[in-house]
Image 1 (cartoon, rainbow over the protein chains, first blue to last red):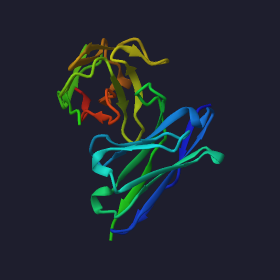
Image 2: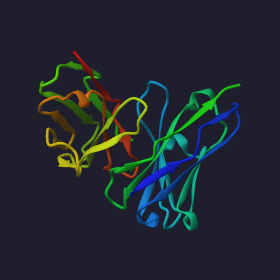
Image 3: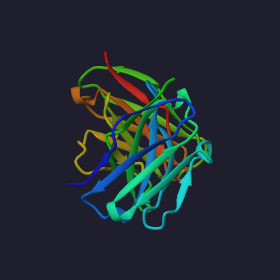
Image 4: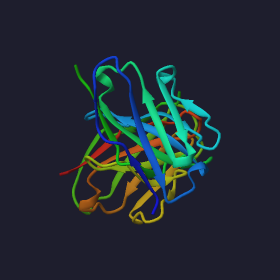
Length: 119
Length: 107
């Protein structure tokens, strides 16, 4: 079945970087955008950007430009999201979610990866 | 960026009630709107896309309507499993945005 399996929880110190992975299975990895969405504790959903696994092209929300890097490894059907210069308010659950090219909406989501930033 | 504003932020309702949530866009997004349901500790789940198309497997008590800048999500008869937070999301532009969410609570 179609699923997105994310890497485990991370604890980082302020100023560090974190890299979260999202392994796709059950569908053609290169046929769908991969989005990243985060949710701070008790808050709403915040869209971070997407990567086109076929071309490697990316599109980041303005807030995250210069700060987030999305990559992929097509040989293992895995997308990655790296966030640098972490601050305490980057503590959140980070989700990956797929979108059929051009569809616009996200139909399958990973279970989320908790990233805690604390000194 | 296109801003999405949901109302109300919280809604108290009883099982069997008809519930309506509104989502307004800061500019026209045609029908490029999706609705998601999220339960505590879980990932969001797609309910509606293209403003009114029901995702496969989603109960028919959920429906969506609207175009341009104003949209609604309606639950025709609220069930115990429907108590959750609902988000709208626009995809008119490359830069997606979500509404702030509407929590549906038990009255």
